[in-house]
Length: 469
Image (cartoon, rainbow, N blue to C red; front, side, top):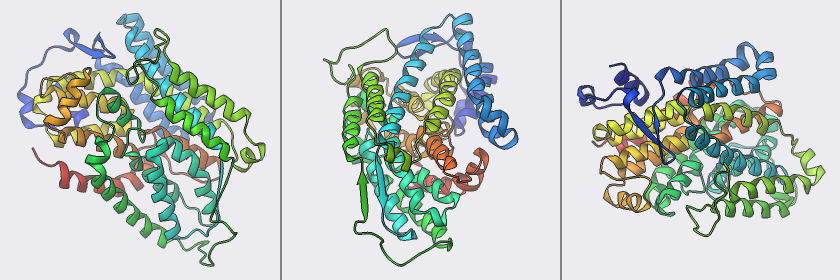
């Protein structure tokens, strides 16, 4: 019974028939992780993850100085608790290795995009008005599909801050996170990590844009309309005397755009995508990650010092993300494995409504990439298909793609619900704070912005497209 209650809390939206189902004891059950069978952890091992989330939420508010000095130690310590349990008690090295591999890929991409974008200076020579801000955010949303939400966020957050310096309010950064750092990247596998993982598993590259463009457009337009209401009410520093300077947009350090091209190409250098790409197994990284870290090093060494100074560039934002997310990636292993097991056991009871809300809610507090894979695996299980077989994934897209559409949309969109829902969120927050902007706390972000603004939008999307049984 405790197992079922745990599942109901995690899934949030379940079919009432689920309560009548019988399940095997957790201790006798296995879950497949990264291609190997692993014994399920005890549910109490979710506590380190919950503790870390609570500390991230409360630290900057109630014990700021302690948190700023020790957040890296706390994150690493809680991560070590999980490692000790898996290695010492379960004798399971593979789960840790799999998570470390994913973390290295995650941080390699973020680091390379962060440093490459810091070497490029974009100056927008126009006055900050509600309409120019809307155009800026819309362009950023489109760009995020070509260089990823991380690349677009790091490239555009600084010029957006400078453009609005005289009328800066926290809502400006919040809507930037909503649109550029999350929802915008929902059209291509390059746009957001969950969609890229789907592509690696066999989802056709252009399936996303062909099947979700209308949902993406509704979400973007409605969010921009709400932003306009906020921005029109902000009269401080509002100027209407036109454009200053000869050029609307000035780009310096354009040679560094080549680094973006290299990073994007390297994303595909995976043995699962291109057969001739060598695997470096058993190392927890591959050619892709080596190239990304090399680009980060080369970009920084060749950067124009004046551009770095103008961008107020330093390593603190990426350092904060690196430390906090190493703890998140490790401590969330038990939660993801328990969710994966439960979702597969009860997959035949799950509807598109369940998949949409469950994937979304968990993507807001867990990393959205493994959450996407877990629920995709559960959805395929309804048809007796295996997520590890590309042919099965391609067949699943044809059989009933409504589940894939629901999972894809919610994994990307709901990442905007919290600061930790997607990697760029925390980086944008950190950069903004270092620029002197008083950003809302973890809970304030949720209660004041994401719940009242985003949740109704996502509910409308569910009602229009995913409320069928």
